[in-house]
Length: 368
Image (cartoon, rainbow, N blue to C red; front, side):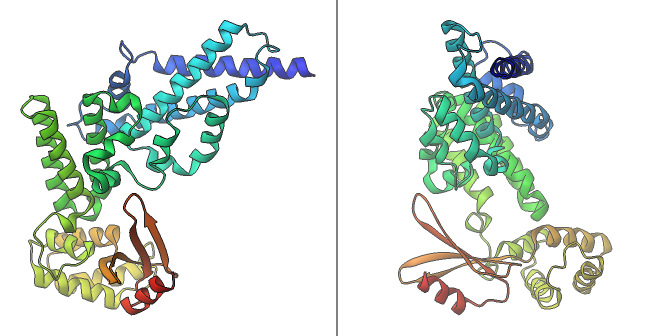
């Protein structure tokens, strides 16, 4: 029985090794971090479609790496009994660590780690148990913040949290940041097309200047950090009127020809007339469309704004001060208040139901 189990586990391990080697075979020599980024992420970071187009290859990489790690973990303490020699055992262990590192670097370089967070704790346990994980502290830095959030919080120091294979190569750092900014722009584009189209143009200009060696690395980093902050926090990066104190209001303003009065009036009407949980309900959505058409007579423009409102929602974001602590308050279609404190500077954020006023939020913060 033991012999049969070991044979099956060995067959599984060898199959996993063959699969991942075949997947990575097209990566160009010298098969370093940049070569993997070019193959699994994008050869040209100016091409907004390439990162998305290579997603199936990255998903296969993640899947095959996980299969390899699990197969190795199942046999790690019985390699000799399974028929492996000492040199073979060391070679397999090196392979597992190598592809573990490749997986981690591609997750960071593409921004995919944001979507994979929920699956990481169990995998990290296997890695820490069976493979030397020098990068474990670096990996954990991304538990609560994305790369762009780290850049907003720490500026250029965020680069120190990238995997070693990326951070030692300035070009790999550049393309990793560019891919992450591009991904955020694409994800946020439906919520404010005009603003994020402008951000995409700025990103293209920065990439072009870098490739033409028009900027020194330090100057490039300063520019890409500044752009990252603009993409992540639109309200802090443009000269908006003070009345536009939420991303929802700013999105309307940007896409209504910078008509402040119209943006505020429409935003107030939507908040006043929309039903809870209206997204996804044809009847409730129709009510929101009627409200929009009362303010916007052009049918095509009304439909465009409806899609923005639907994607953006009427989420309000502003700040309150409790004692000497500034707190980000985000209004959402939720039932309960939630408080979070984010490293490294202890930024405080409270998510609150739409109908809860600031006094209630302030009281909630004090009790915490």
